[in-house]
Image (tube, rainbow, N blue to C red; front, side, top):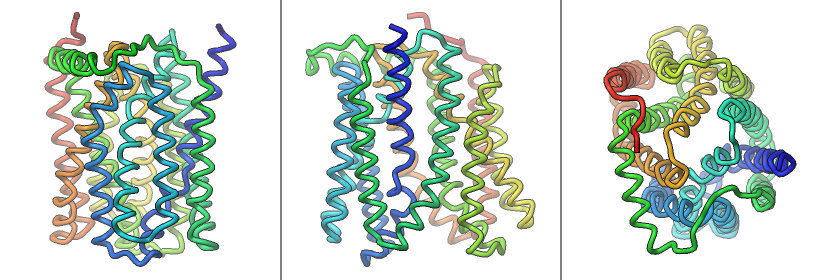
Length: 387
């Protein structure tokens, strides 16, 4: 039994690091521009992918609970390979939109299933938390290396990062196929879909602390996606030379890796709320300080960025039941997708209206206020729901 557990850990690590190393993530905008697409075309492709994920998020999570975590992840990897092949073979906008739609479904098949599969393999919370910390830390290190590698290969040939991404997806597919699943599934998928969704919704509504945690994670993910996406333009607006951006981003990703490793030392059940608050404060400071202080603040923010997600994932899993785990996580991912679709126009308008530095400040103030409201709401709620 111990041997199977150790093998599962090894296979999952290979799967996770292969995912985090997909070179496609780090040059996707450059690739679309190299194909001759406009920024409007790129926005259309991105929105279609987000909508696809939103529409398929809950059904795929429910199927994962009723069918198999591992099979859901296998389907996800196959769809990603198909999507990348389509991106390589055609530069037509319609084909690229279809590829993005397929990728969105692949994302929803993965969302929740990967975390549920891993969590259900552990019997000890401390062991799980330590493993998650190490996993995220090395994952951010993989991302840092992939950031430099993707740009270098793209300069040689624009298709090289995509080809290597296909190879990495095959590695992920083989690794997850070797995983021995510890999940009590049923073959009666159609009859269990509605029942599983209903159970998950009732559980969320009767567990206010879980609901607050899901809302906070959606807000955190949306805020962090904005900060990470516009870090380079912010630095340029502060006078940082473009030639320095690559090395700086590499260092920032290393700091995220260190943050993920550091978070395992935090034992307080309120740690993720405190980290979320400090992320808001860092965002405000980024918008109002000089270039040097901005770099220092981004460095601190990246450490917090590495700490926040292992903390939230671990806290969420402690509040979830095995038979609805992936479904609840899919609801959370759907909330994040909805929030992202809602705020993208606001971000665009705000950046044009106030400029990037001022918008960072306003964004940080709004985000911090929302986190404070969530903390106040959590304090007044019971810790868990007794089913």
